[in-house]
Length: 92
Image (cartoon, rainbow, N blue to C red; front, side):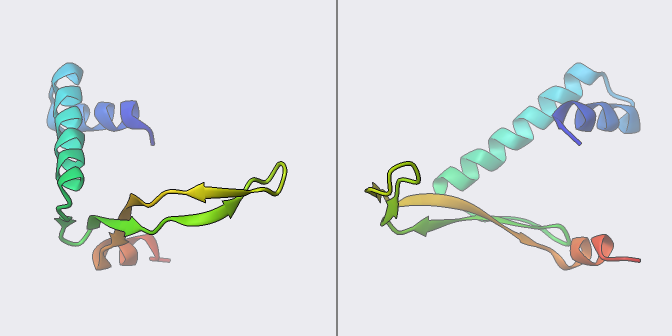
């Protein structure tokens, strides 16, 4: 499912105009992004949690020529799956 399909499904389910639903999805994603940028953790009980983690700098290799490349430290986004989502996906 992509963003447009998500917007259409939500608009249909809640009987909202697609434009308004798109605004809601856009704001939801912007709010999550702002919180993660500040270092906050976002938790949706039963679904999962988004958080950030610092990744240390390291030396890598350029695959084209094998020369060492310095990879700077950075933040990465992590997602931990919630129990209800994990159980729902693994139902047989």
